[in-house]
Image 1 (cartoon, helix red, strand yellow):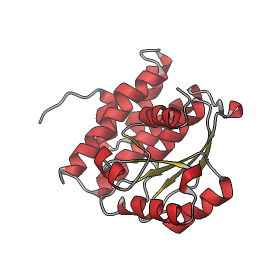
Image 2 (spheres, rainbow, N blue to C red):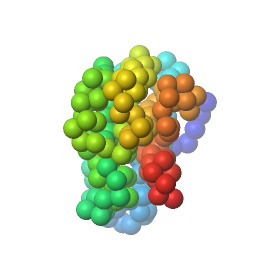
Image 3 (tube, rainbow, N blue to C red):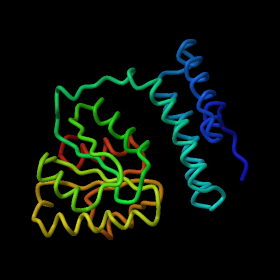
Image 4 (cartoon, one colour):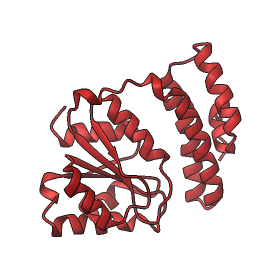
Length: 214
């Protein structure tokens, strides 16, 4: 399937960090589009295409990681344009990538958007085991736990984490949102998650909805 992508999106697809930085700087300098438009219509579509190719087995993990680094390079360039309103703290959100999964660009984007929407964000990193999620939930007492996965082989740990949270009687005070390339709304329902987010913006909307803030 042929599809037209912007130069920035194409650079993300090709994993060209330098080109992404160059084009993002040009777009910001010439005010061709806003930082929000850069993210939504140029940077993220490139990564969406990588996700499609990965699902179709057209590319493999190394290519995904290269594109993730290119996307991250672009996000770093625009990150400071998004206000950090976490001092006004609506609620506390704990974010982490599940066990065996080393990607974090999607999680980072979610964190940026949540912070700009007034949430306190605690990022516990990548390759987080279910037992560690439980430990972090006990320690930080978040209102929402957001789990991310890039791989079909690692998303199973989302369900195991929820089971452990229920066993520890922590689930009633902490809503769980899941997301990532292989995750679907059906899977989220099957494992007992409270919400599913396809994009970083969806994560903000879902968090607000679960906490009764919209």
